Length: 585
Ligand code: ADP
Image 1: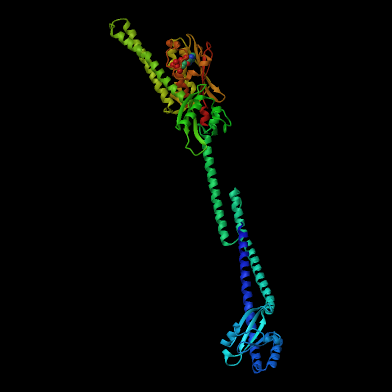
Image 2 (image 1 turned 135 degrees about the vertical axis):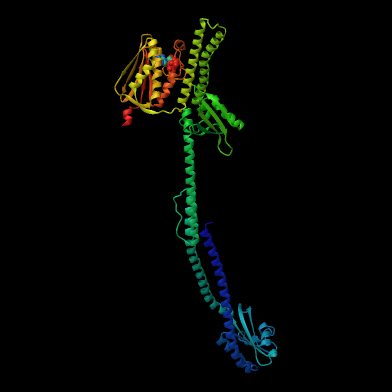
């Protein structure tokens, strides 16, 4: 039941109780007052009448006349009782019947009058069928044996008058109480409205309407409640904002993780998955879908089943098509939520490839070293058994020297490459004129070229310069030129062309050698890669030269490309980022 209604009902009950009590008290008080007044009047009348009657006690005639006249005038019953209790006369009884009246000595008012001078009683008169108020008075001095004068009035008559006043009184009391209820009702309504308002505001907030303000009017207690509600609301808003912020943060972290992450429920359905997972599995909207449909691979789905069944972390490495390798880690989640496990997919293709490359590299190095080492060992063995003047001896010594040089070259190239790759090479940049550099490098290789009957020609525009490390740029050019001379046929020509492509300085080393098949052109820049190993028997190399060229070019912000067709020669082009003059500008 509503608070206001309860208060109003309580107030009404109180008012009713009050009205009833008050009117009962009022009625009894008026009753008493009326009776007291009546008694008082009777007493004065009886005293007056006693004076008249006393001298006529012995004379029956005049006594009767006086009794009846007094009764008429005073509107009361008048009875005179003799010493022995016999009724001498009674105004309400015909004279002839007086003698036959009952003895009145025992009437309580008579007994009391004889004892104390006056006696009073209220009694129902069967004769008159009404309540009568009796007042008796002893006549004469000898009180206990004196005759008694008694007067009686009908209480009914009195009460009739009195009841009119009583109704007015009751009316007044009830009106006052009704007014009380009315005023109380208004007060309750005024008190209840702010409570109602605060309650409405609280209910609105509970429903999620956080814009609803708590009322700012009403008694102090309500204002306090209001401000408590406001504080509660703002701390709620703060908490909601904080939770939202945290949620957004974890959402952002989840979304941007480079690994594919998915959370699944006990039915193996996807609850959530991040961008990487969606991209890796090629599923734009995986939420709610069965995981098995998304992964479509027993090797990927199995670890999920295993992790959930065993409630233990499960890891797997899964090889996919196109040499792609995924690492999968499934972790069961603690019970208490819909999510039972999280799966993390990582693309480890690059890592695996690096690992494979490392393994291949070690194998390649061992392989490359094995040939010269075996040759040296065999030559040394033969030498020990050969006489010093044996004509074979100098050839063997030369073989040992050649193989040792080859090993040193290989080791130098390897050391250089690993230095360059690890980024530990410090460049000392300066302005390098490419034409001058080409001239110097060509000069270094001129003797070798001549021994192979290969000529080197330089075609260069004026003043093409780059900002770079002179020694390293020389190394690039030397490697390219060395290859070109090495692969040129006898009588061939190697051209070094220096010009600009757009505004970018460019250096081309061109030969008319055997060329490189298109399919191999990418791979020749890899370590140890040689197009045709049988060729290197004639022109031994390490297979590291172009790898060094590529890395050195990268360090200079330059790009190396090859244009070649089998049987039609090759052209290696180094294109620099910008001219040294531009850099200066
Ligand atoms: P190498 O020490 O074997 O020359 P490089 O890394 O310099 O190692 O070259 C890798 C391979 O690329 C060579 O083995 C060769 O097969 C091919 N190659 C390089 N330059 C030329 C060229 N000018 N003409 C033909 N093939 C070339």
